[in-house]
Amino acid sequence: MQHVAEQIAAAAQAVRERWPDTPRAGIVLGSGLGALAEEIKVDTKIDYADIPNFVKSTALGHKGQLVCGHLEDVPVMAFQGRFHLYEGYSAEQAALPARLTKALGANALIVSNAAGGLNPHYSVGDVMVIEDHINMMFANPLIGVNDDNLGPRFPDMSCPYDHEFMEIAACVARREDFVLHRGVYVAMLGPTYETRAEYRMARRLGGDVAGMSTVPEVIAARHADMRVLGLSTITNVGSPDAPTSTTGHDVLAAAMTASAKLTKIVRGTVASLR
Image (cartoon, rainbow, N blue to C red; front, side):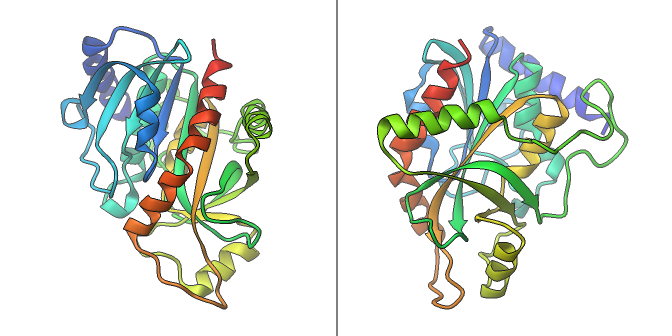
């Protein structure tokens, strides 16, 4: 893992040459949620191809660019597209946006994703704030020789998601009068959607939603002692006893219906960083 510092430094230098501000937060935009970047007063946009050590984002709805600017008068950087293990990338590569955010001076990371609902009380278009996760990817971006300059060998993960951020999200939902769940995200490797047996397993383990991302970024952020807010949009609800088919385009369409809710929560959270 010691080579990671060099990769981060090269990526950070490339961004600083295009955007000299110091961000207060990084925002990772998941499937169907890239429109959040339109809320940012843009200073510059940087294609991932122009950032050293960044790979190509091939997932549906992921533009593959970094948007730098201001939201609620706070300097932020938004990643329109992330790197998934199912694309053939390593957990270390998937974590690079989080590490770049920290290297540029931010101490907060907001991660969003599209997820399948395991909890029968959830509906398509609902939003869930992540209070914990279960890593069923069986991969970790910290594997290898640790670089103590990036974080400790054994980072604590007892509270990976920031409680103050969760409370801000809840306050926004109450004020704007929409449903906001709070639950556990189960990270699966993908790219297949879950079988009925896998849905049952994940639910019995304590999961409320299932997805194919987010956890590598959160682990890297917590390794760097960053505050994290995680948000899942429910794009389909799995019922093992009444199975229905799901496509990637269905997921994108459903995720976009929650865009206004996500935007309000992100704005409220970012505003708290002034």
